View 1 (tube, one colour):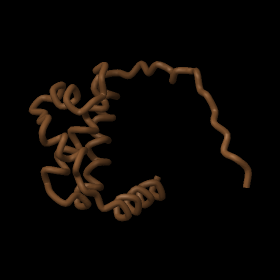
View 2 (cartoon, helix red, strand yellow; view 1 turned 180 degrees about the vertical axis):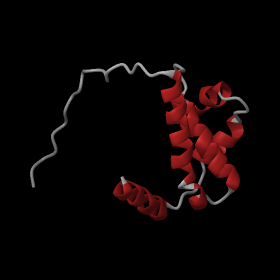
View 3 (tube, one colour; view 1 turned 90 degrees about the vertical axis):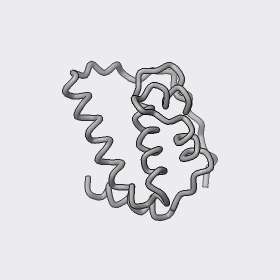
View 4 (cartoon, one colour; view 1 turned 30 degrees about the vertical axis):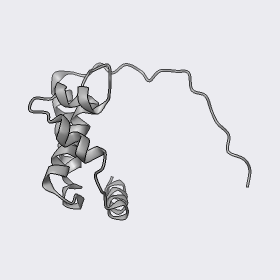
Length: 106
């Protein structure tokens, strides 16, 4: 087996010129995608924090850290998102299995 090669990528991804309808469609698709995993969280608050985290990643904000993302969301809860992402526990194998099922479907 050969050594792994590290590639340096200097090109930025292409800019996307999306309409408001397309953005709404993507946001709706993200909510549906997240819903496929909600039964794998240990608590409902974790599921909510996970969705807020994904929504925060999609926000046009400079810093993609938990606090600015939570504050950019209407009703965003910094503490809940910290608890979900920080010390939150996951069902790793079950999450991977679900992701693989979703990939197989598409």
